Image (cartoon, rainbow, N blue to C red):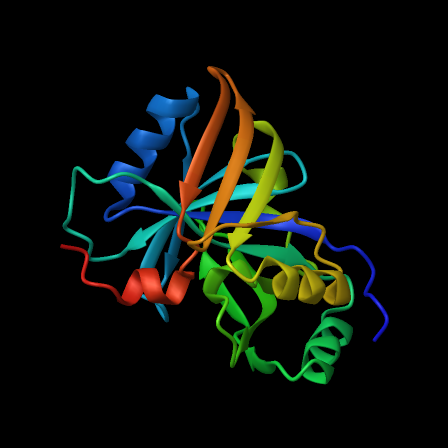
Length: 214
């Protein structure tokens, strides 16, 4: 099967038990304060954003999160899709189940944001196989969020790196994959305090939000 065109990184999701903890910890590590984004009522989550140039970091936490004192971790990421239907069809041809999850949320300033998105199901890669998004006419969050971090480098780790890398190539995902006994995601960024690395198990945003925050 032919490889897809290279897609652009849209955003990286960093999870914490509470949004306050996510913002505080992210700020301590980078010197950058994230801006409250809003809520996703359908998913029971709240977020805060920081631009990375043409992509952004989404700090995400359960809306009712009550845990504290834990770290923050990379759990998932998304790719921008100029032709989202074509990418969905490519995945379908690979035997992946396409689950559409178009959504919207109210930003902190009252603006309504809408997007088209889907994720693949029926695989064992969790958040290492990203979801895909098309913002349509909605201004991209990277252009409306505070800056301060740049040069994002995302790396995926998995014991079956060869299989995951093949799927990446076929879908046009330009994220390097390295073999490692345990799955994971790593985000390296340049921030006010220098190079900062965030890691996590890449378990996916659904699994993170559904887990017991305690």
